Image 1 (cartoon, rainbow, N blue to C red):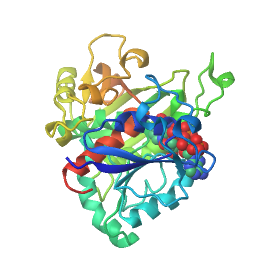
Image 2 (cartoon, protein in one colour; image 1 turned 180 degrees about the vertical axis):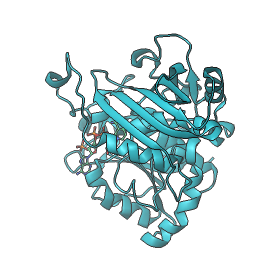
Image 3 (cartoon, rainbow, N blue to C red; image 1 turned 30 degrees about the vertical axis):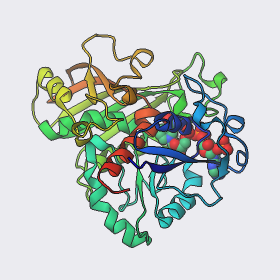
Image 4 (cartoon, helix red, strand yellow; image 1 turned 60 degrees about the horizontal axis):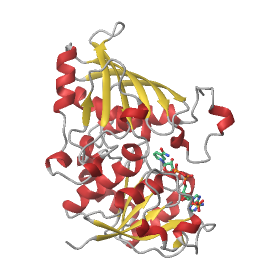
Amino acid sequence: MNKKSVAVLGATGMVGQRFIQALVNHPYFEISVLAASPKSAGKKYSESAKWYLEGGMPEEVKGMKVVSTEARIEADIAFSCLPSESASEIELRLAKQGAAVISTSSNFRYDDDVPVIIPEVNIEHVGLLLEGQRKRRGFEKGFIVKKPNCTTTGLVMTLKPLQDKFGIESVIMTSMQALSGAGYEGVPSMAIVDNVIPYIGGEEEKVEKEVLKLLGNGRKDAKMKVSCSCNRVGVTDGHLESAFVKLGRKASVGEVKRVMREFEGEVQKMKLPSAPIPPLIVMEELDRPQPRMDRYAGEPERAGGMAVAIGRVREDNVFENGIRYSLLSHNTVRGAAGNAVLTGEYLFKKGMV
Ligand code: NAP
């Protein structure tokens, strides 16, 4: 198989390193460019990146020269994980050049012509929106696809089967979010050790908006109410969330667990390399999921961290037709790089890149 050439933009950061883990020895993709800020450019990857992840820096990238995002970059696919305020210019430039840009940054996420994708949930939005995007932005072959905020991603994966089967009227969610969600230097240790911070700037607004876009039909937002409260906790990886959902009709705890367990998307049927089977793991233990134990949920091997672990499914005491549960998803894998790579795998198999 002829592999597609891939650039990672923001390759030295937390999410960039997850992209590298997901792309090394990938059956469809070959890393050809590692790009970061001018400060890292011109050095070998092993000299410019401080590796944060388990398993150590892969040999395949150690000797690659990091280029500046300001340089000319040639690749079939650009996986972008730049700070949102630095991402727009380069993402537009690469899409104009003909690349498929698949991005974890929040710039463009709320534009009507930009699909925001969780492959199992709304992959059809890509087909619906891309023609309009190309016309509007003057792209001939390239395009821009976004993935949602990491906190939105796990929540929406659990809501999708409920919406399809029972309908949803409203959702209340409280998150306990990992430190890696803010980048390596994001939260000072003195602020978070022995502490919980009940505020993450802009996060609640993002989740509340994105749930509606993802569960909508691609042109119109879903009609439901969403309210959330986001907290930073002293956990390295994995966002734990408590969800309280008012369903459109009465459903028993058993029915809810069954539809969650049976849920799958086209990417599971296609057996794509990063597609977890199953995508939702419903646990029966009373004290699970937990970040330390369950953040790498997902089989087969390439899909570790791509499944969402769910536990404590029970009736809600406040909402009529209410259900409540806990969910855990790995914020830099399913919530960022892994979700983007799975989207790339789908687009590749469909001949769109
Ligand atoms: P990070 O660890 O701070 O990494 C940022 C990367 O961008 C580094 O490679 C950095 O290169 C590069 N960069 C910074 N400023 C740049 C500039 N002006 N021009 C070109 N490159 C620049 O951040 P992160 O946590 O990986 O997050 C990256 C993006 O993904 C953000 O938009 C974030 O919102 C999004 N995201 C993060 C998560 C998460 O859980 N962390 C989840 C979903 C989405 P240097 O090393 O050269 O500075």
